[in-house]
Image (tube, rainbow, N blue to C red; front, top):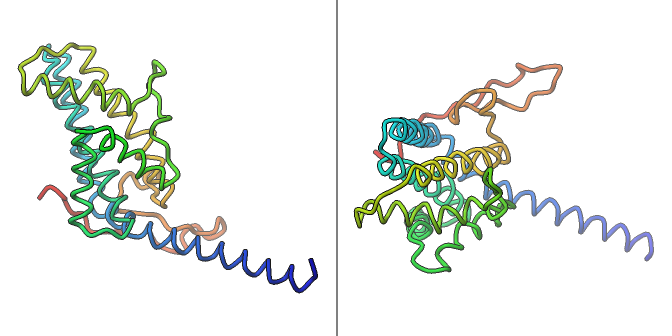
Length: 223
């Protein structure tokens, strides 16, 4: 390879890297904005589901606890993951809503694989997320937690404490091992600000206050 060819190769590689980075940035912008605006309201509801599910177990109502934790799982999947991430693929609000609902329907094997496919596009593999007993969180959600909740709600089946505890663990695992890493990946600073709607700027160490935090007006997607 001549020096001229090598120079052309370097320029092409640099251009490809630049275009890839720009496409990534453009696709992340709608995801970032959605979560910055709606993230706090979504998180409030999900945390309330966890707290209420734990209280219901403690008071001897495992079925209600299972239902509450499963609702938290559905909110997390639909509003923290499926809805914002498919909007990042330049889909309209209507398509994003349709796909996020389809992820939760799980009527077919293809439906159940929608969320893993969406997350893989963001370099995240939900099928590798494990619970404390080593089982796969996503497998437990789609094959045990949601079916058990449906049987409790629609068939008046009994629900065990173990079912409710599993649902709570699946929900907390989704938050800590999927939602939190995603938030950090796309630029949120929740460990510093304690919220989604305030994002610290990336200032140089010598000038930590050079640029102020970016603040977004909070909205509730359920209103």
